[in-house]
Image 1: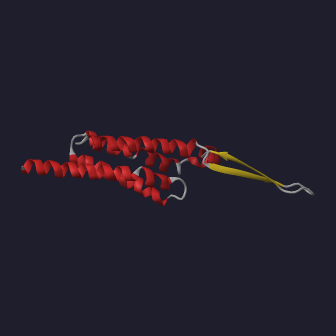
Image 2: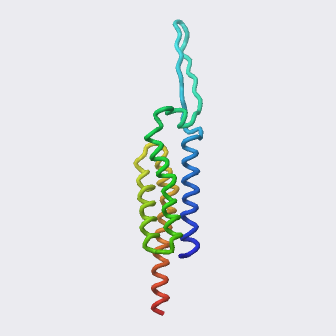
Image 3: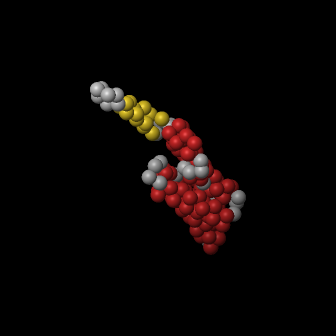
Length: 141
């Protein structure tokens, strides 16, 4: 298996975990409060907060499970490319790609996985398949 086929899922995993941490703990949400008092104009105060603070006790099971799945799915591709078997590499990478590609349905931050992580996993699938074709050509002479 080529170095590129082994490196690309590692990059996807790093990006996935970084996105997961950013979505959970980064200032990705805005919370506003409106105060109204008799005879006074309404006052609106907004501030940035993270998903963990915004959702509080409603963070588990969703969206925490989805974010964890999308963040750590590339680990399947990393394991697959390290096994030495092209079949297991293709199967595990395809599973990782399917998990991250499904993130496109999320109207929150999930589409970022589909745009940032899934293409790297698709590239990994292409590199694994290309390695298989290159080895077959070499065997034929």
